[in-house]
Image 1 (tube, helix red, strand yellow):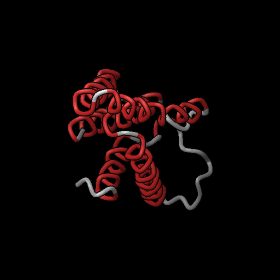
Image 2 (cartoon, rainbow, N blue to C red):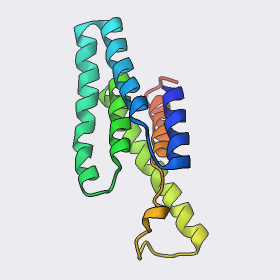
Image 3 (tube, rainbow, N blue to C red):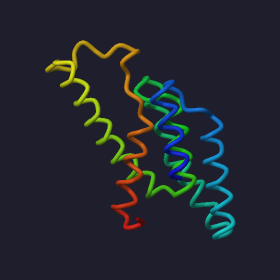
Length: 142
């Protein structure tokens, strides 16, 4: 998972894209790993992790998230299950808020208005990576 999150974070920072191949690999690795480790109950856990990310498509619909961000979170859910995904998302939102605050302060703005231009939108994959570290620590998996 660390390699996946590092790879997509670098891609998101450099080119503002999360390649589908990384997300598909994460989902397939999660499904296969859960089936191998726990059989059908493991498959159910992995599918619930994917399903837990589906409501985030609403954020994509209103352009608050990119499609790659949602697919990355589906891969995290497939790999680690729905509980881990929810803690990752909590940590990611907090990390993204800190990053946005740093960008605003660096630019000397005291308000979020006017909205940031498309060229200044922030990559979310690094925040997801930070959120995953938070989830690992919070759930005592690290």
